[in-house]
Image (tube, rainbow, N blue to C red; front, side, top):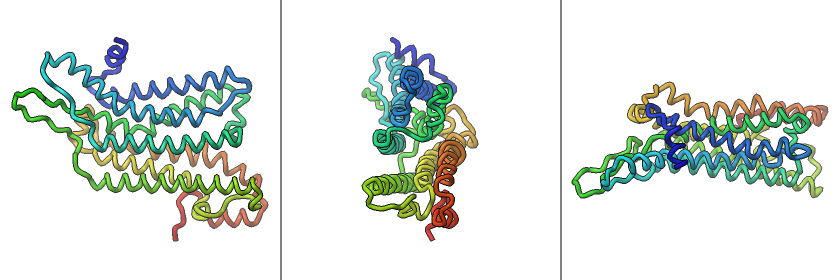
Length: 327
């Protein structure tokens, strides 16, 4: 009964996209506050220990919810309107499953890495100035909910395209087909290719930095900062990889969201809206990493610590901040 009421409250008949996006946004915010409020106000001192882990688990939950929520809604409507007819739904389009799986794989990989890192180091330096200011720490949890919603936007939109009903009774009716293309498009090849490249690039960069830190802790080298491996191509290769993989998801999603039948199925959205829904994910990711909580927090710290070293200045001058120098 409660689930039916929830489906009813979030059912925007004119906009399947919002019928999927709003519940996912509410779920994201609810999970963040479920962990963020105790971490901010019930723990002394306030802790960010579960921040990244919660973000990863919420990303996974939102991706899966966005895939199944439209089906639950359609099944609920079928149960009411079928009048005993043998009706069922087509399985999700392969692209919906692939995009959801891509988001889940990324979140599981990054969340595991970040949680193991904070367990090893005991704290996250990004939160040093927030632990004594609960309002700022709670804002960080709220911002993470927003980040999850915007990053998942292309996945949520593609998953909002409902599965058509199949008449399974012996009525001779031909089953309807989904408006999502069954075949592979060039945007799928490019998008999932970019995703795979970005995921590998980010994973290798994280591994190289972890291995470098472990070796330094074991006194196997005395290098003050990492400038080898992918860090010889870019000063922030993990940020480049992160933005690239979300660009790939956006490309794969935009390849279908911009098609007229799909735009109509989502409530008659415009092409510009469809592109924006997909593009907001990598755009917001790049903004956060390059202008908000990534480079702006790391760069001053490194400059203060190593700024007087000639080797650091040489590396900083010769190595691009973001886009790797492959040649």
